[in-house]
Image (cartoon, helix red, strand yellow):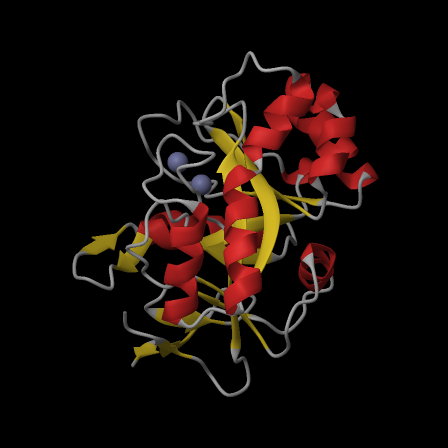
Length: 260
Ligand SMILES: [Zn+2]
Ligand SMILES: [Zn+2]
């Protein structure tokens, strides 16, 4: 697999948005397969962010809550074990769905989720309060994606900490060929975030090992998910990428991404 050439100033690349077949019915590969692909492509770490009960979850909704969470984190656990053995940092998050409007949740733990079954019925504003009470952050995922499963674009600037300004599945070149261009979805998201003073994230929204190289590059290694949340809230000097271009943390394009 080709490897992303990382800027000397930002040599640590992280995926912030990926699904595994263990937790998301729309995904193709297991946690271990995903972890291996990211390691080979030159990433330092990944966040596994499965679809929750409001989206394409692979976990039976009727399971008792604690069992539900145990099953929900299997893809992450598998990826984490692979990462421990092979040198890839693996962190946990999830993607919360509200009738097509989706949010990435970072910085809480599976045990916090177990202690808060009320998240399952929470409105978008209640979700925000609960996640904040656990030290986490809420990121609006691909707010301007136009797709059949999203009945309307709905914005919640008061109930998110950041916006996924670059979703790689909107604008990418698969490493094994193919090109997809809906950069307008990303530009609109960046404008929205800028207008509301919200920081930006970037991720691939990867559902298979056919990586296209999106994510966020840092000048240092992240220690854990809380560190990642803090870096966003403090607007650390990180780079965003869709795998084709580098962008600064305000979404301004920089250089082209090179691959080895
Ligand atoms: Zn999906
Ligand atoms: Zn996703």
